[in-house]
Length: 80
Image 1 (tube, rainbow, N blue to C red):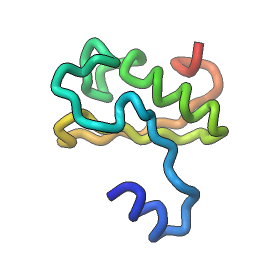
Image 2: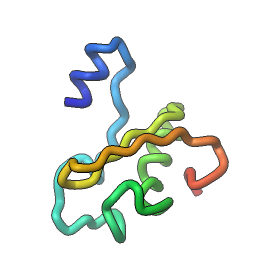
Image 3: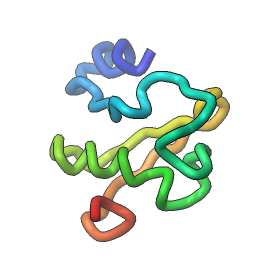
């Protein structure tokens, strides 16, 4: 749905975190999967955003009942 929404609003294509793009009940890339739970859940997303040169990140938890948005300020918790 995200790709269709970006296209419908004339936005550039979304940048995916490939290691988190497909559902995985084991959550191998984070300790705790909910986006509101702190910096660790955002690390890979901010790294991908920084590489792509985009400041805004959207994240949802694995069962998609939470959606969060953040703008990286270039300081923290961004890429290390």
